[in-house]
Length: 146
Image (tube, rainbow, N blue to C red; front, side, top):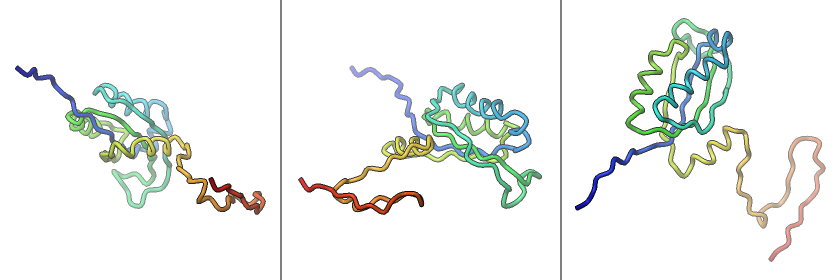
């Protein structure tokens, strides 16, 4: 006889939060930690969490003209996503939020990019020249053929 074990389906999610800039300015660590604790309290794993930008909004949201954008990548049981959604709705520091399911094959590259690590596979045989910034000499790079 086959035994049944509960297999929790976890998914990788990109979470984009729009914080009330006034709340964030008064307590940046506390506002971010509050969102992170909502995720971890539900058994989620935070892969990366960082400030994205603070800027003027295209249109007023709940009377606010300015917002603070926060980017987070998480791993969470898909059944817990509804609870996280509800917790975000009740959070007074959040003006808007969105959760986007990310394909497992892309998550490593997205997390590395969010951590500002450059992850670009380069085929050395196809590399012709490199030039970054204005202070780089215009030198040719020779690649030996194998």
